[in-house]
Each structure stands twice: as structure tokens, then as C-alpha cells.
Amino acid sequence: MLTVHHLNNSRSQRILWLLEELGADYQIETYQRDAQTNLAPPELEAVHRLGKSPVITDAGHTIIESGAIIDYILRHYDTSNSLLPETGTQEHEEYLQWLHYAEGSAALPLMLKLYTSRLSDGGAELQPRISDEMGKHLGYLDQALEGVDWFVGNKLSGADIQLSFVAEIAPMLHTSAALPNLAAFKARCHARPAYRRALDRGGFYAYGPANA
Image (cartoon, rainbow, N blue to C red):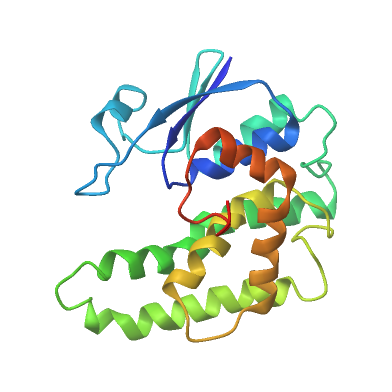
């Protein structure tokens, strides 16, 4: 059976959401962050040497990286192709772009903001560049959602699930500009019944709905 090695308050929450959208059969192994360092526990290194989450195990395979995990799950468990646009279509090309953009580009300035905030000077010299990059990428996402609910063909896909984490943490790190479309996108994600079921199974999630 597919197992999600789920770290609290991490990107693995969106993998649970994906599986709930598909109605797939899966199990969860839960890991808790260290209360002092906020780092993943060493037990995750027994699953994969990097000790990061998300990671899944299935049919003898161990797979890391959210994009690769989403791709694997959709190819093996999305029997109706409900969240994966058909190969060879324009929508599929857009889907691949958004799927990899989420972690390849959009998340980087957000993570830099998070990490530099822990420095004694807040990484002062880097802050103007980080803020500029955050504004550029979040503005790009907000503009892409103008007049639509979802990123690809105005239909929920794995790319939306991948991008949901960016939408969830953005307000915590970038508050200088309004991003109404991205905020509405986050609310739509949080309102989906499958998202709520994933919260029930995964436990408390700091970036989820306030009333969850």
C-alpha cells in the first residue's frame, strides 16, 4: 500500500490532499518536528537519507520531491485522469510548467525570507532583493489567476495542489502588496471537501484554514 511519510506542518499535507481528491487507498506514517529546532526528526532518514518530507513509499519505490510524488501518484492512481491533463495537449504543457515552477522558482524567495529571518540581522543586505523577487513571483501567480479559479484550463489539477503551499505561506512572508486572486485561490483550496478530509487524517496544519 502507498505510504505517505507525513511531517507535521510541511509540504506533505498537499500530498494527503491529492490522495483524498483521488479517493486513493493509502496509509500515513506521522513524524513530528523537533520542538526546539523545528527540524524533521532523524527517523525520517531511515526512509530516505535526506530525512525530508514529503516522501512516499509504494510497491518497492521510495520517492521524494513534491513534483515527482504528484506525478507518480497521478500516473498510477488517477484512473479517470481527473487531475492530470491529457498528454500532448496544451493544457498538459501548462500543467508541467506550473508543477515545476512551484518549487523551482516560486518557493525560493519565500524560503530565503524564512531562513534569513532567523539571522541576527535578518539578512538585511539581502532583504531588498528577496522582497523584489517575492513580489515578482507572487504578482505573476496573482495575474495568472485573473478571471479563473484554477491555473490550468480553469480546472483543478495536480498543479493547483502543488501551488497551494505557495499560496498558504505567502501571506506570512510577503505583506506589502495585495494579492486578491491568490488569496481567493487559497480559500478555494481550503474549501474543498477533500482538503478538509486530508486535514482530518494528517492532523493540525499551521497553514490551513483558521477554523479547521
